[in-house]
Image 1 (cartoon, one colour):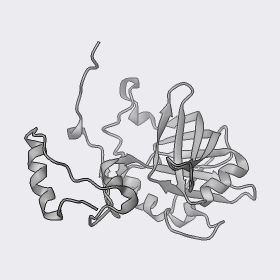
Image 2 (image 1 turned 180 degrees about the horizontal axis):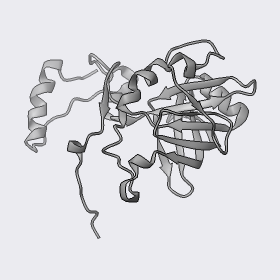
Image 3 (image 1 turned 90 degrees about the vertical axis):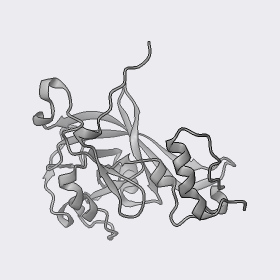
Image 4 (image 1 turned 30 degrees about the vertical axis):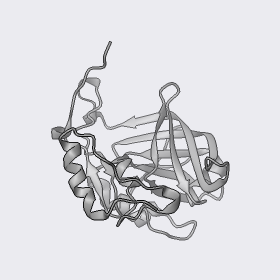
Length: 225
């Protein structure tokens, strides 16, 4: 595979900063990236965290964070997360058709991380992470009481992903319609959600990297008419 030597990557960055059109590092994912760490996750990010609570048909509760998560539609509001492998959250949503998304903040980062532990089905990650279950209004899975925002969701679709060649991969995109929203009133000054004051925690590249949205990172641009 024809790849630029690793030591040439840093000088190339200087060209990007100066607005120059320089030769880019190229690789084909199917053949490997040739770097110290796969850059894909780091480039597509930081990403919001899909901190998903579900309840199985047997009544067991699961709470797990998913780094492949985002919003997909306004009306009706639809969010989704990808389960890489048939994990417990996917099983529960298939069985009951419901889940709750909980906003992850800097203050809840450690608890969110604890809930990512690989444990047997039926283990309650709420208890594992020292979190409080709050009853939902329209769905059966509980909410994370400590989280300032919760979305109650009804299953809209489950799609098994496939490659460009049509080969199915062991990853499932779970889409849910948001049917109920809980927001801490403190984050609604003047009726506008305080994105930059909520301490929202995002997943970044690498095995341990996260990022927090902070007021000093705000940038405003008006859309062209």
